Amino acid sequence: MNNDVNSSMSLLSRIHSDAADFLTQRLAEKGLPHFASSHGFILFQLSLQDSLPMKDLAQRINRDKSTTTVLVRKLEQEGFIKSESSPEDARSKLISLTAKGRKYNEITAELSGELLKTFYKGFSEDEQQQVCGFLARIADNFEK
Image (tube, rainbow, N blue to C red):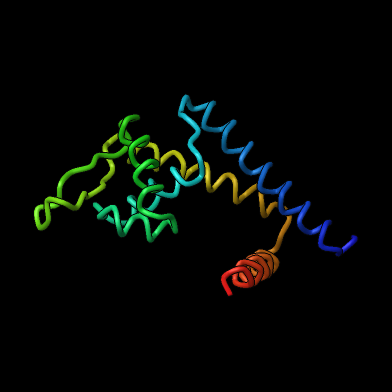
């Protein structure tokens, strides 16, 4: 295998595209909308905690507050989340999942399992750990 930069970047791009296509197809089969990855990440973050202030949600998804507001607005319009004024500070909005959002997260958790099974097909447990470690190191290189 050619280990030059173009080959590695091309493979990463192809894997990203194939994984997105996989999820889009599975979501369509279940009659669910396909959101941008940022929308999915918001829904996932809200599954970890009952509600989050907009500011905290923006930090967790690594987006600025104005971008997060636009993303949240779309999810709210689709009925996946709700936004309410904070009891402590009426200027602050608390974002939480609706029943529809929780159901969506249950289904996407199943699909994520299918995706990982496909991703690591033919890999031993040790190889899976190595791949994850290498990818984490690459991600860290961009954080510095």
